[in-house]
Image (cartoon, rainbow, N blue to C red; front, top):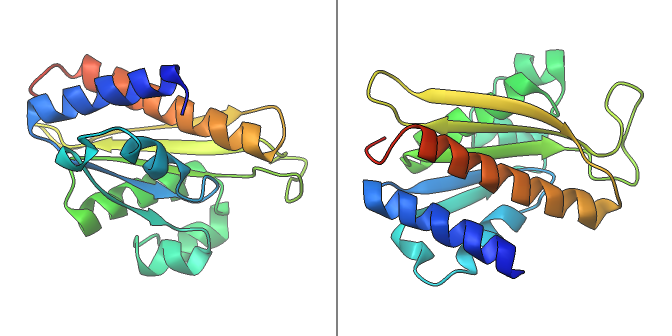
Length: 170
């Protein structure tokens, strides 16, 4: 892991630890790489609860509770699916924050409307007045490993921004 990612994870861990929060990841296209990146930092067991690698749609529905009709209507690489993955992970693991990703890392699997490099991400955070959720579409360039690496970095940077925006208490 490069120093930049180490710094991001260390800051993120500090923010979570200060709140007494835990987090988890629901990963499809990254295959557990976000969880791996988080656990490369010593002390991550204080705030990282675990991950579900939901590569197959059946895992998305069975473990994360993504409705089959949502998958059928929108496809696995979509805003409704990643939001459902993040919500489902928070319920399943009982964590305060969740990151979910689903995308097409390539080099195969792309289409005209969802080319290789298309990645949907979602974040779900516990909030005082209700959960805070956000989803975003990204189109990354490069080969499979580059798409996965960009997904990890972007997902964690955005989680850090969201935590900073909600203040130290959440």
